[in-house]
Image (tube, rainbow, N blue to C red; front, side, top):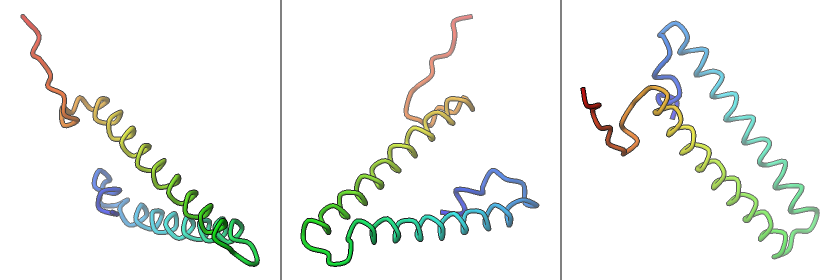
Length: 92
């Protein structure tokens, strides 16, 4: 995962970017535990676990959608045809 996040950076900045990604990973994990703990409450029952599961699923789906949108928009900006669409040469 970190190789994907840092592959376009110059070598001098890769360690800083890796540290930033690690920090973001730990922060998101702590935030997830905090939100799920709030959802479950003091005495979790089936409904609380269902709500926690649905929130986790919604966050995962939202992350996947954001990743796909980001990949498509960044490949269009670079003119990269790897998003599956064929580009036709202009008639000259």
